[in-house]
Image (cartoon, rainbow, N blue to C red; front, side, top):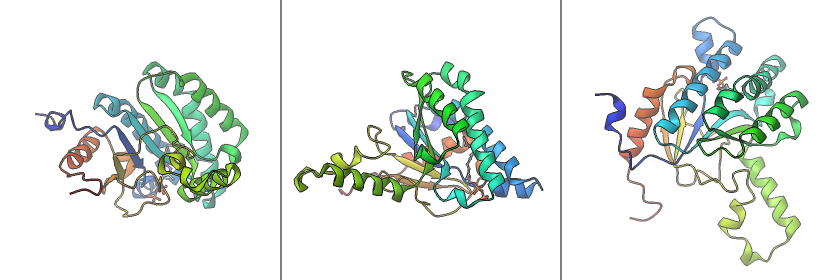
Length: 237
Ligand code: FPP
């Protein structure tokens, strides 16, 4: 029996969000530069994008670059920008062929032109696909996202009674995307790191010690099994 067979296929989370942490540690353990960890992380991401829809996941959101990641050495930031460009150029045909729809969550105004162009083309090419929706959080910060929504509210000056949770949710990058049911964080840290602060209000959290580049199908199945053992009450009893 494989791990997959013990999953309840009626209880698969529609939306899984992932904090892909541990690329640097993975590389260090092997005496490699951090960039090698990010490249291995990209390979793991490709594998998870293939497996997620097979397991019934409809939305996969991954934290690829945070608003805080600009503090990293220029070389590492440049490498991550180039990886994103590469994914949108070299991998896009395969993703498109698999019916993946790509969305970007984040502030694209600070992204280098070459990467931005590739991202725009990838999003445009896949916009009508109906398979897995892959949301890439890129130059994303939860606080920044909320502040930007607050600014829009002030601009529109609606009546106080109009400002409902639904109204506010629609001003976020995730406007029409259902909230994540499950957040997975790899590499053992017990932190949210400014990821989807509004959207994960009722998400189940799953932390594994596995470093992101080592994360694969079996690890995803384990996370789903753990999720299925939880009793989600959304504040009820
Ligand atoms: C965190 O690990 C990971 C990142 C900041 C980048 C995540 C990027 C990928 C998984 C590759 C795919 C990327 C793109 C752009 C499509 P860390 O570097 O903080 O690891 P550490 O905590 O072990 O140092």
